[in-house]
Structures are given as structure tokens and as C-alpha cells.
Length: 425
Image 1: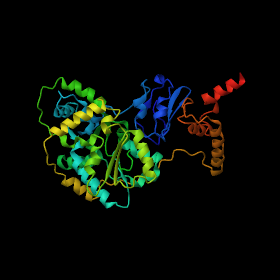
Image 2: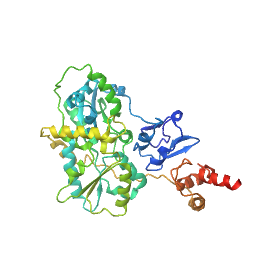
Image 3: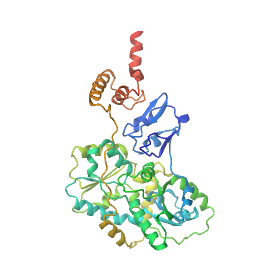
Image 4: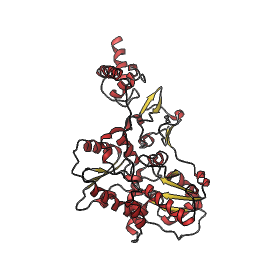
């Protein structure tokens, strides 16, 4: 059973047969998108930001991520894979990164590109954007799609603070599509470009991009799914030193903290934050103008950055260590980004300003809405204020909202029910 609301695509699905109604997912959802009713979890598609917190916490595999099936690549004449930088950290040291990259060609791709290719260009783009928009402080990184959607849902006043440029893999997609069309004489529809990603938010961003003028990619595959297929192929590959270009020095994008360190200069002060609880705290502080001294804040919903995504296979700390080793041993490469700079100056990477996502409207009629709000406050006084989630709602306030919206009953409150039973006894 998928998340239901045709206005929104989500890369998360609920398996009702596996759900025990334990409410663990309810407690960790940053936007209060999950409720447990009749012993089963349900996700409100208008609130869900695809952060994957519920996927990570569920011990019963009742909330599962989804991505595209690999066979969709065969719909295109020329097939291109773009690797998230987190991919490099998934393989043990006995499997060289070039081998893990080349193995993707064995799966049917014609070209394999890396997010790491555009890292240095992205740093110069971000610095330039910050200096051109001195009236906005702080500017918030837009690389993590879960954070972008979180701001839409919970902190809409901060939408103007977002970096209004495409994310690295989307910038690379635009560049490669133009390149292959020119070099190979292919039409736009002949070329299929697919992302190999570490988290469900990136899958959702491919299918329902926020702020983009068009769908840039043709699909997204989870690193975990691709990893399994690569391991099968590696057994059959005998080439120990494959001839293939890699960009280890640019793998920094997968790690929390490094983007901020690279952007930080004498005239730009940057801050890095990772992990959803920390992101929520910092966004609240930004909203209160408590952090206006910073020019740029990098926000990643996953622990340690993209290496912590729920579609990876390796522990985020182990993956981070492997990537750091690759970066340390990387040889310096001169990458020609002149075409990327030209596209940037032409505004090809600009995105449209985002609109807030309306999530809670008690009633279309203002008079009815006022009456419901009054009723909500009356109910809230009756509730214990423990925010225990035993009722299936994340907080007592959320339960009061659900009651006035006819989605729950005050009898769902276990604490009140026990009190009444004691009084009757």
C-alpha cells in the first residue's frame, strides 16, 4: 500500500501485514505525517517529506523504500548513470572504486558519470551566489531534497533563504544531456539519464522535482539495489585494473561538514548540520533570526550526510571512513568546467521559487475553521499533555486536530480511558 494522494509522489510504501501499530514511526516523523489507526500506520501525503526516518526506525519492515526497476533503462537508445558520491563508500577495500564504477557498464549503461565531477564547480557557484545575494542571510543549502520539502511544510517563511540553484546531480544531468545530444547526434528522448541515490528523498525528487522547470532525469535506483547486482557482476569480472576515469577528490559531497568547510572563506561564514533532530533545531533558530551571523548553512537530514541515507548498505561511519581514504589518496585532477560556467552565467541552473505546502486546514469556511479551533482548544485542555503517542497521533495537540477533523476520537487517548475506568471502579 503506497502513500495515497495523487498530488504528491512518495518513494515510501506501507506494508500493512507487517505493521504492528507500535507507533515508533509516529514518534520520529519530523512533520507529524504518520498516524496509527486501527493498529496500522497511515501516512499523510501532504505532510510527508520523504526523509526516511520512518524507514530507518521500523523494526518490522512495515515501511519500505521504493525506487525504479532497473529494466526501465532499456527504453532508451543511450543510457547514462549518475552516481551519488555516497556510492564509493559502500564497497570494501578489496574492490577498487574504478572496478565498482566500471561494473555498472555490465548492467547495461553506456556511460557512468559521477556527482563528484562537479564538486569544485559547485563550490565556486555557491560562493558566487552568496556574494550576489547579500540581502539574504543565512542562505540555506538546497542539496538535500528532504530538507527542502521540510522547509516547504514546516518553515515556509524560510523558502526565500534557499539556494535557488539546481543540485549537483541535476546540474550534471543538464550538462550531459546537452553534451551527448551534440556529440552523438541523439535526440533528447533517445537519452535516458538515471540517478543512483542513497535516500528516498532523492528518488522522490526525480519523479516530482521541486523548483525545476521540467523533469530532468528518467528514473532513480537505490544504491542498495544496484549494490546487490554489482556484487553478482564482480564475480565474473577479471579486469583488476579497469581503464575508467574516476573523480575521488570530489567525493567530499557525500560527507557532512565538508561542503561548509569548502565554501567557508574570509568573507563567507558557513555552518554544517546533519541529522533530522539537529536540522529541526537549527531551522527554528534561523526562523527566529538567531543565526543571521552565518552566510551559508548546509543542512543534511541523514546522519553524516548522504552516507547515512536509508538506501545505502554500509554503516554511515564506515562508509565515511572509506571515502575519506579515497579522497586522501586521490591524485590532483584538472577538470574543465568552462561549459558548466557558461551554462551557469546563462541562468540554466536557476530554479523557480518554491511555494509553501499547505498541510493543515481545519475548514475551507473561515467561520467553521474558527469554531473548530475553539473546539480543538477545548479538547486540548482535557488531554493529559504527555505526548506519549499511545493514541496513534504524535502529540496531544495532533490528536486534538485529528478529533476535530473527524479522523480520531477522544476515546483513542489511552491515559484518559484508564482514568475513566478507575473513576468508575
